[in-house]
Amino acid sequence: MNVSSPDGGDLTLRIPRAMLDARDNNGRDITFKVSVDGNPTQYQEEQKQIGAIGRAEVVGKIDYREITLFVPKNSKVIDIIGTNTVNIPYVGG
Image (cartoon, rainbow, N blue to C red):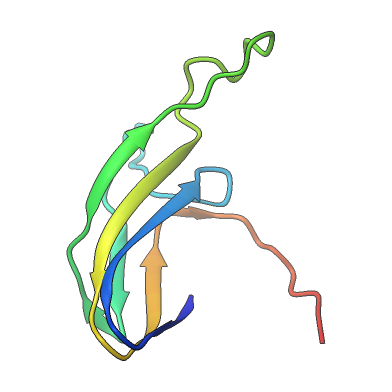
């Protein structure tokens, strides 16, 4: 992920599990590997769930992971590495 952080500060990202996740072989959550400009960084995680009335397959599932990390002033690149990703083709010019 490319960022522009002229002033720095906390950044909160809501990451849909369908796009990126980090789980062990038993399906339990494990930590993401996160770096800012190539330097490993710590983050805080809060898990939330989204329910939908009438959609039993969604109710009670945790649909995303939410992480908050400090992005230092003038940072350019954030890398978040998990165990499962979705290949999304680039479309653009």
